[in-house]
Length: 287
Image 1: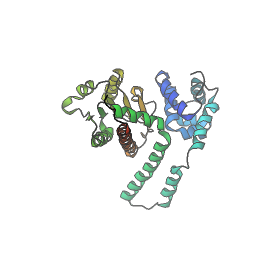
Image 2: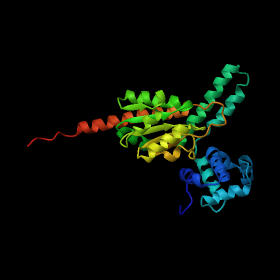
Image 3: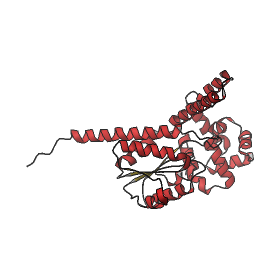
Image 4: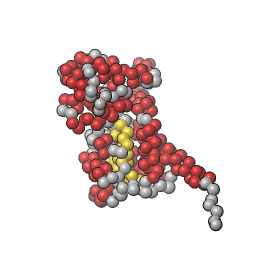
């Protein structure tokens, strides 16, 4: 990169691109920067280093690796992103929690999940770009068949995508590995098909391996994961990184399900628009 990233989207992409080549210490800082951008924007270099459990000099070295003259120059990008954001739902959530201190245990659990879901959906809208959505919709719309791959806690997202794309009367295959045939199912995918792969930390090794195999064979891959430095993102044609929720005992599925619904409905709009455009074309007259 001849010049350092000029905005937040560029720096996220650059961190993801460089991540495999970074030292273990710099990889830890990269994860911190992507997962806690508010801290990078607002903390001093010493405070951020303390949270990342590294020396301040390592934070400076990370910024210089990305092409910046120092940490403060990189920090400016994160601060600009923070200023551009809409008013924070997290502040509203904190207020709600202070206002309801005596909720019963089940009600408190529901309240906690609802509050976190509001924050997740706000994050989703702010960080998913129109370009990525358009690219993913185009890949799914032109595919001969769309195959959906996920395991463990990400599997409900794959089930929904398989069901909903089928309701659009699109050829779709849920790669569920019944009978131990997952590897064979993935190897049957052709380059005119598309693969949607979903995985979050701790990533399912088989999903990573088989997605990488499909990508190497030229299959367009749409990835839904939790970080720009996710190993699954390396195999993506288009990647949606939704943020790392690994500090929570249960990962909320609200964000990936909402994204999945948006993709399905957008594909439906795209296909309807294409059909109408074809119908409006004048028929050719015979000679």
